[in-house]
Image (cartoon, rainbow over all chains, first blue to last red):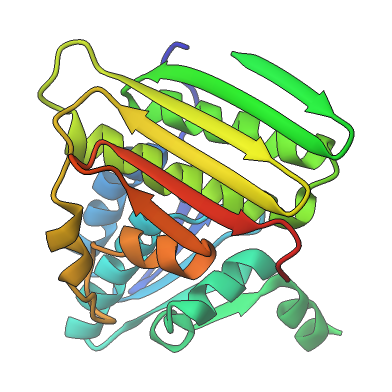
Length: 117
Length: 140
């Protein structure tokens, strides 16, 4: 299996102190090394409100959770916060079992659909 | 790689080089395999446990070895799913690691917690380079 080179597996949009990171797939150990430097960049620019949008993520592992917690810790030190949106039912259950739903302000796909409706 | 679907049972084994990209590809294959075999309800748990086991092997266990390989075996029986991951490294001190508790603000150290949340039984071999996990096939 070879290393694949292509578009980064995320899209970052920054406005003032707000930053939205939309992941095109999963948030796992294999993509942390791609995302971490970009995330550090937006945090260095002063972003304190971070939204991680996971509309297509099927999997979140402990490395991905670690990245979200690290971002939440940094944001909290600046008076900001992290939100994790559009997570699947399986990922939401995982965060519930880890007692991280409040810490990460996580919300599921169905929950957001019903709020819009 | 050997794949033997038999009615409601499934056996799969694979050996990969110790790299995160290889582990990721293998986990995606496991996901597809579980879904195609009608086991989508347990796909997330199996993939998560496989990822944690493989990532642990890649990042902590055999990083210092030139000839690094990791072997994964999955067996889905009528009642139980067994996942075994072994590497050719020196192993790690799982007894010590199990004692560590992870706070809500900790940025690492959640792998072993996930094992206990998603598997009914977790067993390491003595030297810590093999983990075997058992999951109930019908757990909700």
